[in-house]
Length: 95
Image 1 (cartoon, one colour):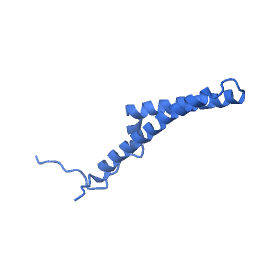
Image 2: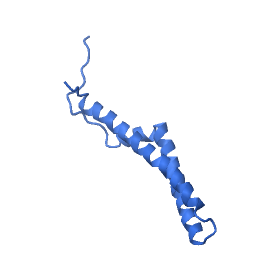
Image 3: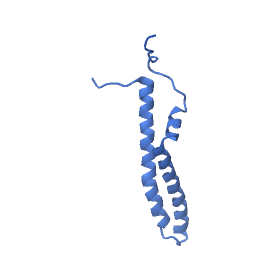
Image 4: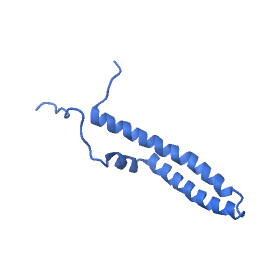
């Protein structure tokens, strides 16, 4: 038996393949949790700032969590997108 060749590009994948990869990536999960906590602190911080009880503590925490979480999710999404591109089209060499 010979070596099996992959099908010619572009190869088709399920439409949810990219999000399934991102959904199982530890970095993307941690980033999504941080982003969610940032949204919660943001909502609470706005309410506390309006009522002058918290004096922007919640908004500061929201900013910190969002500053960590959102770029982490975007970075891991882009990594999964590059992997999908290589799987669909194949690796393109610069020469």
